[in-house]
Image (tube, rainbow, N blue to C red; front, top):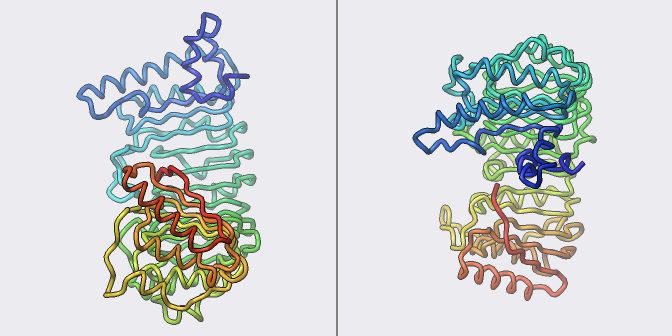
Length: 445
């Protein structure tokens, strides 16, 4: 019972507790082998360390007495020379009727996308037995050859595919009727990419779309997350009222469209996803949506109650921030996730500074009626941060605001922390109706 609640790494440590515990760790139902925890790639003999790591995995599974395991994970980047050993380990997990299987053979030196990868970068092929493994509920396969058309796991509920040239995915979805979560990471996709099925969660990250478009026929989707280049999404037969969470990040590569074209595309995308309860957008979106043909009329009201802005708080983003706030009449919580926290002023842009922009008399509906909580992650009390927060906290703007939570970065020096405390005190003095809480640490993931 104790072992079942521990991570695999902590599980191993229990073997030194006493003689009785020496071999109990082999009875755990959750096995995880991570190269990063055993091999330091910066040392000269890292290859011999990899050999020892593979031997360690083989020795471990040879001592496992249980016949059924919950999860089995292998993280080994570019395992050339270890093909036979990896095949044995995968077949071991199949023989133990594994429910959750993670096979990650992507190299830590690869870029985030498929770009520049070659076919010989993939040396592992899934064993045939895995295609019909009916106990499997969750499968993650990165940089591993497999045939999507052969997958016939009736009980599969979660699938994550990465670093793969993915073709004919519709045949895979049709063979997995219970599939609820699909993640596609750093893949090269079909010329015409279309997804249809009963999926509830869809995550697409850093993929190449040759046609620069994606057609989605997912009537039950409630979580949609996309990171990558700007592409055109066509949502068909999607019940947008079910949307719980949307995440949009278009900052991974050089923009494919002009600023105006991107503004039009992303404004239409926001309109399609406007019913999401939680909406997270990136700094690039904040920059370009004001550049579309007619941003005020083109962008419809968004029904989200929690808006997360991943922002640099650059002056050229502020018009986009205002635009979104103006179109979120039901907003209850606003989170600012500062991507590059800095305890010093940022330069003005085009002769316009943040102070000038926020001194304009603008009061969004959510500020007057619904916005109760403001969260800032990465608070340093830079001038851009203070101008924005001071605007939102002032009684004549944030009528409904009740609480402001500020999270400082963990790396701040003592003088910088004092400056952040001073900024929090200044904000508190701005309004006696709002409670300002300063937290001592936040780590950027």
